[in-house]
Length: 205
Image 1: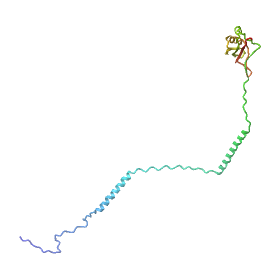
Image 2: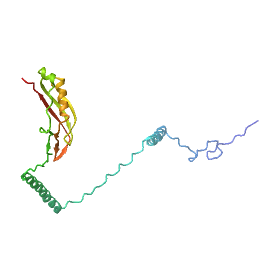
Image 3: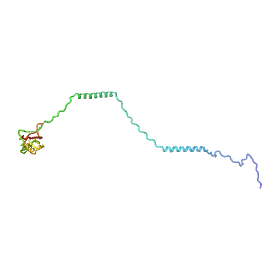
Image 4: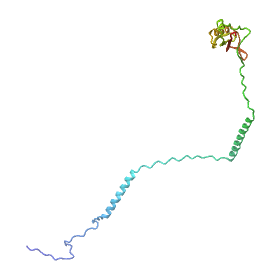
């Protein structure tokens, strides 16, 4: 079998040559440097968003201090206050001088007029000297405590200090119980009182 041969024509479109690629179909492959820059930008954006979200909220603003407006002091008021204080000090000093110049007045206290009860010597009998004590030569002084009523009569009689002899003490008690006294007085009024009445016994020599 014979194969027919065809002459080669350079202008012929039947050549089996590869067609030229279309410019629109060519893909542009990015370089590795641009890819790394893009990743770094994305990472920085993510970190910024993360830390911004974790940041504590800002504290509320401090309340403003109240504004106090002090009214101006009038010169007339200040000028009036100074003479008033001076006049007050002068009045206090004058009162102190006046008080020092006045004579000291002492309150007069009326003391009550008091008189003591006294025995009526003309109406009272002398104690009877016990015979036994007289025979033995016993003597001494008996002090009796006498409660004298407002009427001058003894209400109670007791021995305040003994004489050393029971007979002498007993004789003094018996005698004074029958005595009469001029009652004590207070501001002119007769009142009850307590007196100590001595009774003396002297044996004959």
